[in-house]
Length: 374
Image (cartoon, rainbow, N blue to C red; front, side, top):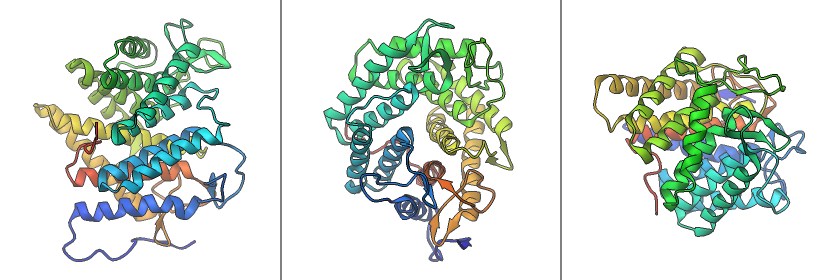
């Protein structure tokens, strides 16, 4: 592989918004370029292709998400059809069922289906999202270590941010979309549990508790993923309740995350496991929603937070595109500060697409999900 610094010469006079829109297109096309596989696999797990036996259910839910991002940016219905096709592929690859053993995986799928419904207006996508929510709450909600959601069906005693964060977001959004009251109490109770057990006084969010049945918190797992989930959860509830303190807590956590988990304006490497490749993408996703919300409020402190977050996104994506373009396509590892070396999981590219789509819409001054059909 030959790494190059630019994808093509930028025409003189090209605006920043046009340039980053162009890069977002390249990022989206890079997914097919590097990872496309014959049916029924459809995508290899890594480049170069190797072991494809693992079915990465939750990674594919994020592929649905980034295709929806492309539709919001371009208005091209091809992206929306692709998002729906990926959603159908997840179910087909999963033996025709939407359910698996991991509650957090299913929550990501449910969130993607809900966004699909909001984008395209298909009631079937909403029904499938609700079906997942019902299954998750029935099977995973319990009172062990406090009323909250377990991580997976075989570990009902283990409670963590990766399960409760997306449950809060999904529950608040389903309440908002359907008007049904039954969803909201799970959002508020899960948030109360999360803040009691895993959110530090400075806003830093720990990963989980009681993983090994000893009641201990996993203090050594310090992930961007959890910070992004908590910020997203706070903002989802703030959109429903209007409670200003939720926004203030989201600001606090975002700033703490930048201080604790980044260096030189870029998130540090969180490991070389495939799942870890998606972690920073979740943080970028919900930090971007925070940037949108802060643009709507008054106050010097909020304006300063917003400015810092925008600068962080710009710096990180500049570094990404300076180091991780290979033969005209984007191909990052988990470390954006270095040229990529393989094998490279497609989860890492999904994070890069999320960040690039965020950069593109920030340069366009366009809020997230601003092309909603319903």
